[in-house]
Length: 130
Image 1 (cartoon, rainbow, N blue to C red):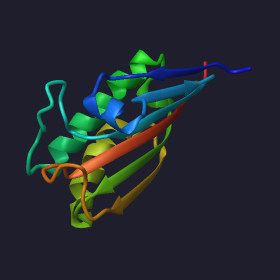
Image 2: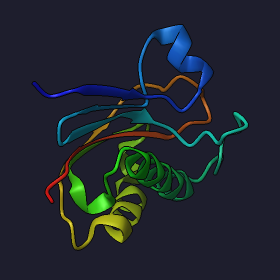
Image 3: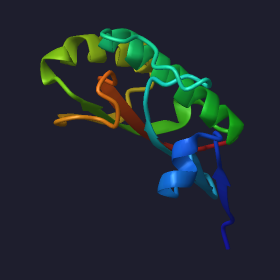
Image 4: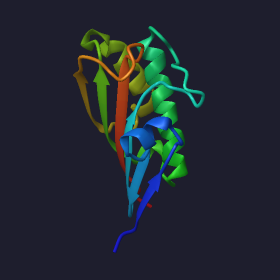
């Protein structure tokens, strides 16, 4: 039987909503929706979707490393943007991280995120292949 491991970032939202930053089952790693909020609760890149996207992907990479995975293990990303016309900036930042990995991906427009200054939220799925 494959063991389930929940990894927390310590965010206040995890306790309030009841979720884990990462859930790892066997060689599969699922990263919850991640926003451009730093460890002190401050929003990074207010008004700059490119900067927020880069920050989020760096944050996801950090969490993956904690779970024993790396960016190249990502097989799928999902991006939720509040303004779909920002797709080029988001796509540019995504490409900077994944140009050689090329995961399956989705980008959709949503009406809002949990804080009005958040412009994008990203989740990722990874499979660790040794």
